[in-house]
Length: 181
Image 1 (cartoon, rainbow, N blue to C red):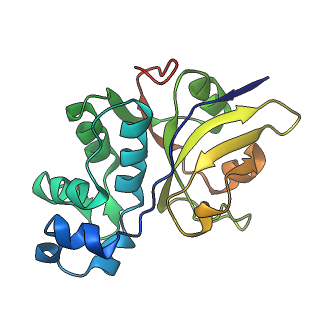
Image 2 (image 1 turned 90 degrees about the vertical axis):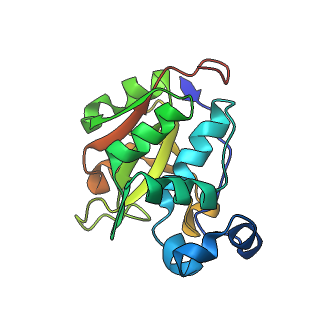
Image 3 (image 1 turned 180 degrees about the vertical axis):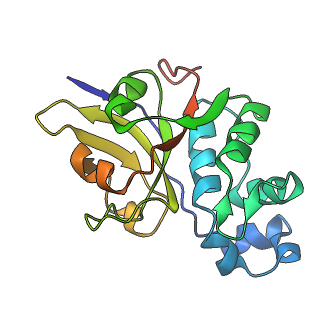
């Protein structure tokens, strides 16, 4: 069995023209903010998947600053969930055990906290990506969208590899059926 939700790709690296057009310069350094924008780029991808108006990453960043969603390390899960809900996609920040991820993916994509590039060395968390589906198998293949540079050329990993870098923390969304919630 295969269940994969259609989630368009976005990058967390903010384009200089977008940054200037939407007044990002008022927030400071574009590259510094880009390095912490994985959660906001993931939120933008979710909004697009649900057919909602999707502000640019710069506009989402300005909203996140206004609503105190950001910490020095990145966006708070509850803050991203609140922004998603405010922008028309009901969501919740909640623990999701790794053994429940596939069941969750049957209903909707999920933003999860993993270590960038899913290393096998025991590090967990710090980077937000979208799990968007899976293919059954002895070690199911998980389809993902990762807004980092590495994620532009990688989109699948075995569930066992996800589990080694996954914190158990996720942002879940209302069911997505044929691109609509």
